[in-house]
Amino acid sequence: MKMNELDPALHGARRARLAQAMQAGVAVIATAPQRIRNRDTHFPYRFDSHFYYLTGFPEPEAVLVIVAGAQPRSLLFCREKNEERETWDGFRFGPKGAQERFGFDACHPIAELDAKLTALLGDQPALYYPVGADATWDARAMGWLNAVRANARAGVAAPERVQDVRALVDEMRLVKDAHELGIMRKAASISAGAHRRAIRAARPGGYEFELEAELLHEFRRNGAQFPAYWPIVAGGANTCVLHYASNDAALNAGDLVLIDAGCELGGYASDITRTFPVSERFSAAQRAVYEVVLAAQAAAIEKVRAGNGWNEPHDAAVRVLAQGMLDLKLLSGSLDEVLEKETYKRFYMHRTGHWLGLDVHDAGDYKRAGKWRSLAPGMVLTVEPGLYIRAADDVPAPLRGIGVRIEDDALVTENGCELITAEAPKSIADIEALKRDAKHDAG
Ligand code: GLY
Ligand code: MN
Ligand code: MN
Image (cartoon, rainbow, N blue to C red):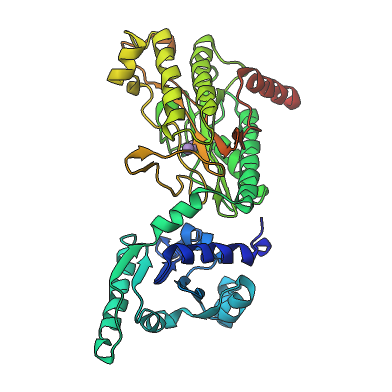
């Protein structure tokens, strides 16, 4: 999705909904700063997710202001046009261009933000902004409030309430609209293709980083701007390191590889994990562990449906995994004991999923008023059980060093869920068939 395919009406409608939720007051939401990587080199620029959700505006140094009320208004503060800077760094919209293209009621140079806000906040009941997210903006917000208070003798009242705007926007972002789902399906499809490519490319004597390169190549050649998070490519015993990051070990015949990787397309994340053999076939021990995780994922997916509680997929996965740990002789005792004492956590120590959207661990509460929230159509979550068997004396020898995770992205629908990452193969038969094809194609 290219930036110029954005529909300003869509973001305008989101701003109107936020203004309605606020009822009154002024919201201020800045985009992310450009961040230095080292000395005078920057990280690739990535906008703030809340800001982007409400604007579609891609440039740094921009701030959205929404004035709620009977006739809500939204204003953008952004960089001015600058021929010299544009010669070095590229196009910028400037206030006039931004107003025409993005449908704001008014746009102003970013340098006018403090002065304009001091005027806008007069006689308003509340200032909404991401409270505590960034110390510089916290100080700046206090500066605006104090500047308004300095006008008290002229009869101007300062806002009495400061509220975190994220609570309102998080709730909006939790349920995806058709536009978002279109992008998320595309992102999921690109990532699934990247996993197929990596499964085909894995070979004994290769390196984890070679598979990382296959993933990144496939993301980018399909137009995805970034990986949504840095890919995990873990071979052999590295499969048991949950956030393995170095991706630099050799791949050995007989080992598994665990890849957790997803692209970001048009701001939206995808998040897939597949685990597969370096060579053509799973060993008997790998197959046994894999089948447990696959069954746990199926049980969890079965529980992803509107009306079910957030925790139901996790509980279903844990039950199957715990029984599997008993069957594999990783644990002893009864299933009830294992669940009650949570001894399964030695081999399954993370949750079964998270919200997915503009952020890979997306916005939205998991509990409300002390209760797990109910799933509703339009929510997107991951389903990602795993089993990680670190080598130890009390673990059956053939299972030592086997780690398996299987992760898909699920859209909650009226009658169940749609797995938007289904194009990435995951049955043992499908994975082994893909490896056979790859070998055949390589001659
Ligand atoms: N890739 C991040 C996660 O699975 O949560
Ligand atoms: Mn995930
Ligand atoms: Mn993941």
